[in-house]
Length: 93
Length: 93
DNA sequence: CAACTATTTAGAAACTTTTCTAAATAGTTG
DNA sequence: CAACTATTTAGAAAAGTTTCTAAATAGTTG
Image 1 (tube, rainbow over the protein chains, first blue to last red):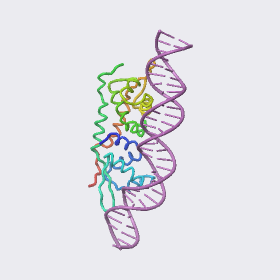
Image 2 (cartoon, each protein chain N blue to C red):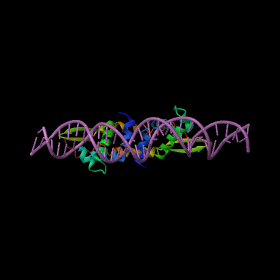
Image 3 (cartoon, rainbow over the protein chains, first blue to last red):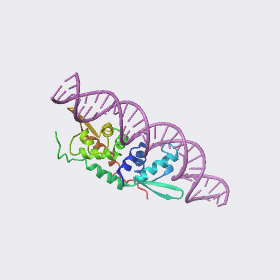
Image 4 (cartoon, rainbow over the protein chains, first blue to last red):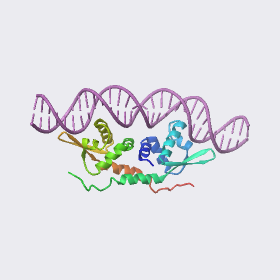
């Protein structure tokens, strides 16, 4: 996992919206796309960015591709943020 | 605060490194710059991105500009991530 | 106030990202 | 297997990001 890739993936509003949608469970590429005012090709691009960042994974069924949250990467990001909690040991006024 | 701005700011390795450095307390622009192999102008650009994202704030003293972590935005980001914890109420196998 | 130190701004080059349309792939089903 | 549905890939245009050098600003101090 690369933090650069992860944060870049999260910096786009459509991609964050996709992740929020996927909280309810897996969805096909087409179903995801129908929530947005962009072409299927563009949605496919965003899904590929999320997949490269390991924020989602895909499974195939018939001629559908389903996407699902990969929660383990969320845990890793939380750990990165935890570095900024409390501490303040050396604070200089 | 805008999540787009925040995550974009976090997507650059130099900017993440600056944030980690600032955990120890406030630092001047020059002091921050001396840790990197880039011009002061470039460091100034990165600091402006972090400032626009509200991840740091600045204070002036003599002809130095000091930068400091703004921890409140970190808390807001943690809340955004918390949306992805647990739940799984509607999981369909 | 002139010279100095610290930092930012402006402008340009190189690179990356986002979006589209059109075409390709892949799997399904009469 | 031909036609269909779902999705991805390729290529290009437009917009955004990162870095540099050079110049500007701003504050300090002899």
